Length: 214
Image 1 (cartoon, rainbow, N blue to C red):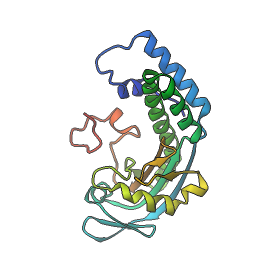
Image 2: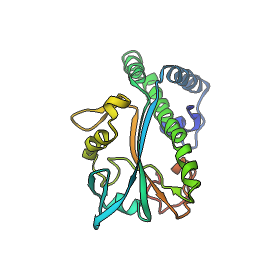
Image 3: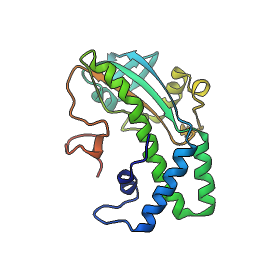
C-alpha cells in the first residue's frame, strides 16, 4: 500500500504542467504522515448473481435496480462484495490539517484518495489470483453512487458485510462512509477476458469505457 505521486498530481489538476519542488515536498511529507497513521482493514464476500428482471440484480438478499450495474455485470454469474477503509486516524489527520493549512489539506486529501485506491488494488490482487485459477477475470470495482447504482444501497451493503462490527465502517444519514477514506464496491467475475487494467482509467485508452475520466 503506497501513495502514487503521479495519481496525486492528477487529483491536484496537474495536466501537462510540472509541479515545483515545494509541492513535491508537500506531497512526500503528507504521504509519509498518512502511510504512518493508516490502520487499513477490508472485508469481502463472494456471492452468486441472479437477474429476476431486466435491469435488476439479486445477490446476498439484496435486490438492486440499476441499469448501469446490470450492464456492467453482464456475463458475470458471481461477484465479490468488497469494503475497505484506511481507518479513523486518517480522518483525524485530515481534520487537523484543514484547521492549520487549507493548501496543505488539499494535498493531504489527494494523497488519502490515492492511498485508499492503492489499498483496494492491493486487496483485489488475491481475488484476481483466485479467480484466474478458475479461468475467470475481474470487472473493475463498481460502487454505490456510480451511475444509477443509487448510493442508498450503501446501507444494505454495510449490513450484509457486517462492516460496523468487523472493520469499524459505518455511514452517515446521507449515506456517506465513515471513516471517509473508505470504499464499498461490487467486483464482477466473468469468463470473458477483460482489457481493463486493475488501475482502470490510469492506463485505459478506450473512449467508450464508462470508467474513462475526462
